[in-house]
Amino acid sequence: MSHSQTLWEEGHEPGRQVVLLGLALVLTAVALDIVVFDHVGWLFDLGFAATCVAVALAVRQRDFFTVGVLPPLLMMGVFLLLGATRPAVIADRTDGIVQAVVSGLAHHATALVVGYALTLATLAIRHRVLAQGRTQAQRQAQAQAASNRLGSPAPTRTTSG
Image (cartoon, rainbow, N blue to C red; front, top):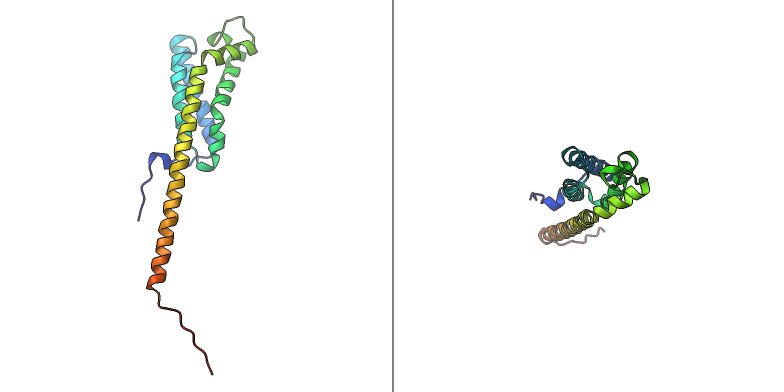
């Protein structure tokens, strides 16, 4: 019997590829926000939260930890890059790298919390659904083995001599 996969069961991408995908998506959101508004704002926040959900849905189960710790590292990495190259888009023009990163994280803390919560919730739901699927498959295998035993003839013992 074929079982169609749900949204929660479809993620099969390795952690490394999902991290690179997340980085590409967040940098795209940053670029769009800078082009449209000349600073990092609400467009980045929405893109960041959506990216967090997307990577949590795409990753394979054994790499859940990688995605589970990704949101704060992703935001910190992007803001370090921006703080080093264009601090004015996340902070005051005169701020140094560290101050720009701290300002950026402070201004986008809500997006970080929401993105992180969505990531963890998505991973938790996926873990539960995948665990239930394994349990159901084990029950089906046990039932199949039991039905095979019921249809088999009783063992007999023969001796020679």
